[in-house]
Image (cartoon, rainbow, N blue to C red; front, side, top):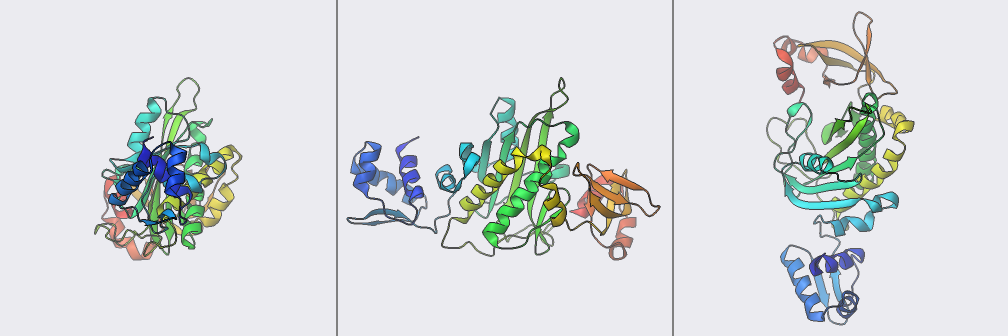
Length: 345
């Protein structure tokens, strides 16, 4: 860790309060001039740091720049043991995490970015990830789970993210099975879980869980503008909201994943789901089929009932809660799963 990061770590740990420069220099075994140069570098990078003679340096609460140092002060319990790899811009946090998992990175390794240039969602979709308005992170897990129970990872992560968003924004969060979080009727968060199977054991070798949250994003592309939203209209000036949100997500994940096989979070997932009881569309083969969502079972599958009374537990696929009468004519003209997936988005 270079001197600039060390100085930043001290300022982050005392954010909002002055830290004496001489004391910092003594603690870091460097000169006061070296501390001053490190502070100057940080200010040039956008950190709002004030300096007052005889008081020292103070990092203002309004500074909202992601770094490992900005996140660590807000971590609790086992989340403090996570290894944070924070980057300004990446192609995709999931892509990088998978490469690291294959190379042997341990569970609890977290890739965090302020921007993704090739953010990904389910079904090959892109995930809009502009700079400085959202949070994009992926955690590597090595759970002892069978392939059949792998959907529990996504549902547990959804509850963890929902609780974090509610704590930061104060707004109610609902979940659309299986991986989308909604606030005020708009999608604000997507979750993408990817895993590798251990052929010998039949269980998972590793799983990477990507979570993308729109914090203040507003300039959405035309194709998602009607459905996408953000958790805040603007960032508050009294806390580094992006770092706090990242820490809350990780705190909740560290607690949730310990009890994943106990299915403790499924009941909350069910309560947050806004599909249950709704008429929906199910992609069945190459044709959309009408159904009613009636439950989420203990393996996190969506249980649906078709008009003929037949019930089915869906472990994958796409659903929509668009009302049948409002979209009946459009549905008739949809051909194939790719067109249907685009319609559902």
